Image 1 (cartoon, rainbow, N blue to C red):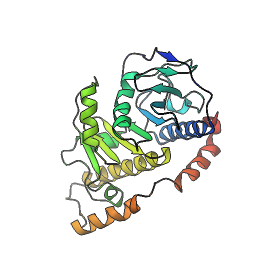
Image 2: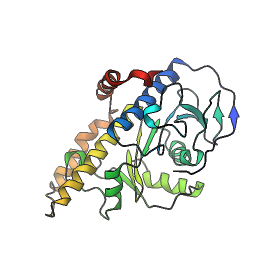
Image 3: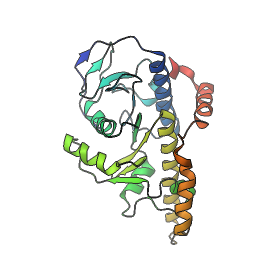
Length: 257
């Protein structure tokens, strides 16, 4: 979150490739799905994606637009230092992108970085034990979830290094007292991982609200299930994404514009 509109530096751009156009459509769809699920937080938080075949270039939301206003064409192309590439009437929240930039720089496989302030995720991040292995959804992240302690609003390069170290090679992370983060080799993968993490957090809060100690699968079952859900490292979201896009198209296809 930032209270200033930033991103004044500009640079020329080359025409968008077909690959960039597809990435823009997928990323705009991801923003719309977040809004549809009620995971957005006014105009704050971000989902970023690397521009195909353009190292060091990323797509991110225009700062000031709601997530249900994001389209393929109004996404802003930006470099790691906050320079806006090409013609755009919008600015970006450079301080907000700093978190994403740190992850993109540390994880070349993180084509998409998704950071949300969704309520259930924040609530579980506050609990000392974090995410418990009490549901099938949670077991997707068994021993595969990073944690990063809250350091305040200001985001420095030094914290970027610490955050990247906290994430390590995990597909997801809980930012203590702050929110959730997932990374994906595609936009679809980052989204599906986030949906799974959000569901796991929601289940945990409801289960613990009953007051009784939760029933946990045995450690052997926890380990086995996590490996099964990882599915040999397959890219997640391949089957789900076309169905999600069809769902969006039935509601409002303007994200493709």
